[in-house]
Length: 84
Image (cartoon, rainbow, N blue to C red):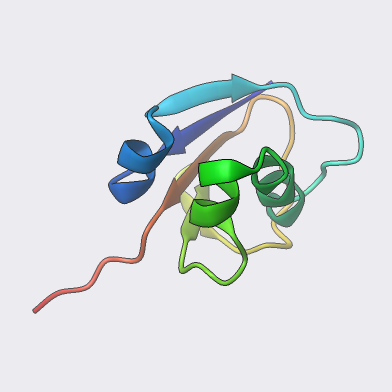
């Protein structure tokens, strides 16, 4: 199981701040997890689509699509922060 956290607009759009997910054997990296979430369809597909600007962290470290994930990890998805 991994813990997935959603922040800012993602938390609002998805209607949850966190969830526990049992990783299928085929999901070994962040890109695979994102694809798994997108496959849920509807708002998941809209908010986490590859074309959407979404950042991620694995165990509090900024991560990219090829970052390996494993049981026990904490993964956070959040929109990029802009200042003004």
